[in-house]
Image (cartoon, rainbow, N blue to C red; front, side, top):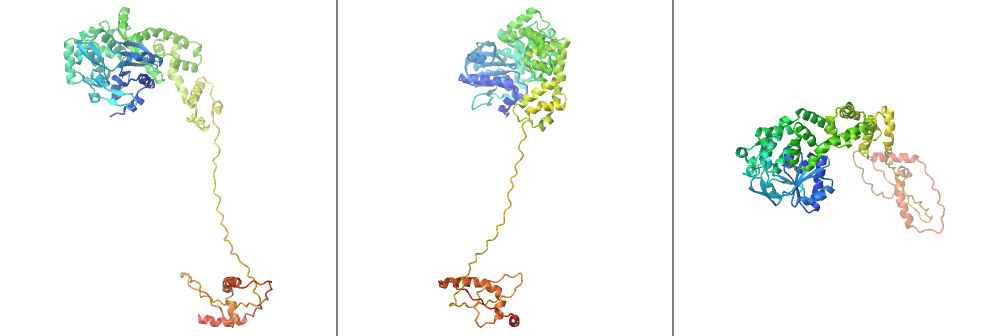
Length: 547
C-alpha cells in the first residue's frame, strides 16, 4: 500500500499543502474532523497531477466560512443545500469544503441531504475511484479509508459505479464519466458501460438540474485540456443537451497552444498561474456576448466569474508597470515578474505584442536565467561561504541580481563583494602531544654506616665460597647461606672471596650492630694491615683441582 504521508508531503505543491493544513487547523478549532476525499485521493494514488482539493468535514462546513476568510482564503461560491464552500487560496489553489452527508433521490437529480459520517459519505459518491478518503486528523493522519476497493479500480484504470442506479439518480455522473475518460484515458468497467449506454438511450440527461449543468460546464474550463473535453462532450451528444451554442468551432484552438507554451515557460521560472480565466477567454472566443453572459451566470463559483472579468484590467496594469520605472533594470524587471499576479503575467505574455514587452519576456525566459551560471561557487567555497551559513540563499539572490545588472564582471569585483560575507578562518588545530615518560632512576639502596665495633667486641671474618659458573641456559641456583670461616683460614681465601664477602657482610654487620650495646663514646677503629697476596695464588691452585 502506498505511503500516503509521503505522498501528501511530496506530491502536493507547497501552496496546496499550506492550504490543506490551514483548513485542517480551522476545522480542528471548531471540533470537526476533516478528510481529503474525491479526485485528490484518486490522483495521489494513480500518480496523476493533483489539480484541486476536495475536503469533507463531519459537521456543517458553512460554519467555517468566516474563519477561512480570516486565514487568507477567498470565497468564490457556496451551495447551501449540500453545505459546500468553494474556495481559492494563494498560489492558485482551488478547493471545495463540503459536509459529510448521505444523499437519497426520490426523484432523479433531486437529492435529499442528511448529515452523516465519513464512511456513509463515501457510499453516496459516483465512482469507486472517487470513494476514498485520507484522514487529516491527529492520531490518524494519512490513514486511507477505502470501503469499496477503489485502489483496485485505479490500478486497472477503470471507472465503476458505486450504486447500480447511479446514472439514473444523478445524470451529472454521465458527464463526469465522459470528462474523466477524456482527461485520464480510462474506460468504464463492463457493467458500468452497460448502465451508461442504457441511461444515455433513455435520455436521463434531460433530468439534469440547473446547478449540476452549470457546475459541469464550469469544470470544462478548469481542465488542463478543455478543448479535448469539449470535443468528447460533443461526440457523446451532451453539449446539445446542456449548452448547444458552445462547440469546438467557437474555440480559438491556435491561441490555446500559444497560451500553454507561455505557461510552460513561466512554470520553468517558478511562476504557476491559474490558467482557468485565460482558458475561458479562448474557449469562448467566437461565442456571442449574449451566450457568454448566459454561460457565466450558470457557473456556481461567482468568484471565478469575477476573476474572468478582472483579467483584462489586471493585465493592463501589469503592462504599464512593466514598461515604466519599476522595470528600469533587469533585476527590477525580474522582481516585478515574480511579485505580480501570475494570471496577469500569463495573459500579457500571450496578448502583449509590443516589441518592448516581447523583449522583456524573451530575456526573462532565455537570457537572465543563464546569469546564474556566473555565480562563482568555487571562489565562495574558498572564502568559506557555504550553504550551511545563515542567509546563504539571500546572498545568492543578491549576487544574482548584481550579475544580472552587470555590476560584477571581474573576479576582483566578485571577491570584494563577497568579502563582507566571508566568515573568519577557523583557528589552527591544537595538537596535544603527550610528554615522553621519563624513566625514573632506580632508587639506590640506603646504606647505613656501620658503627665501628668497640675493641672489647671482636668480629670474626666471614669466608664465602664462590659457586662454579654454569651454562647460560640453566637457571642460577639460589644462594645458600655461607658458613663462617675458621679464624685459622689462610689469607689467600679471604682475598679470593672479597667481592662476595662485601655483599654478605652488610646484613651480618647490621645484625651485629643491632645486637651490640651502644658505647658511650665512639672510639676510633684500628686499621687492619693487609697481608701480601702472593701466597693466595698458590692456595687457589688446589681449589681449582678440587672443582
